[in-house]
Image 1 (tube, rainbow, N blue to C red):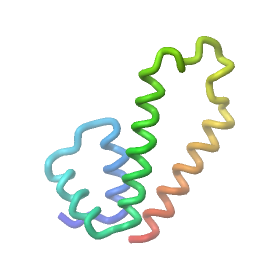
Image 2 (cartoon, helix red, strand yellow; image 1 turned 180 degrees about the horizontal axis):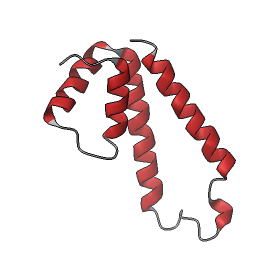
Image 3 (cartoon, rainbow, N blue to C red; image 1 turned 60 degrees about the vertical axis):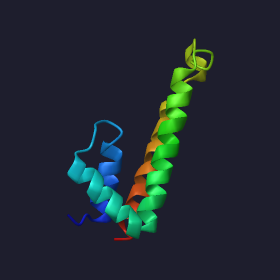
Image 4 (tube, one colour; image 1 turned 90 degrees about the horizontal axis):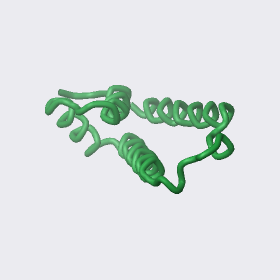
Length: 93
């Protein structure tokens, strides 16, 4: 099963929310052996996931009031940057 960069980017993102099937995992791994752009995207995704898990698991770092939470503007900027990175990576198909 040959996957495009776009499909691999989608599956990497999907893997944050669900377990990929064996076929999907194998397709992603084979693609990652050949594609540096998708390797970078996968590393960035793992880094973000790990940072979110570390931050979410620490009770002392969790905001007790709204002053430490991200503003909607900050969330929008982060989302826009992530989407741009995904588009840039899929352009390397």
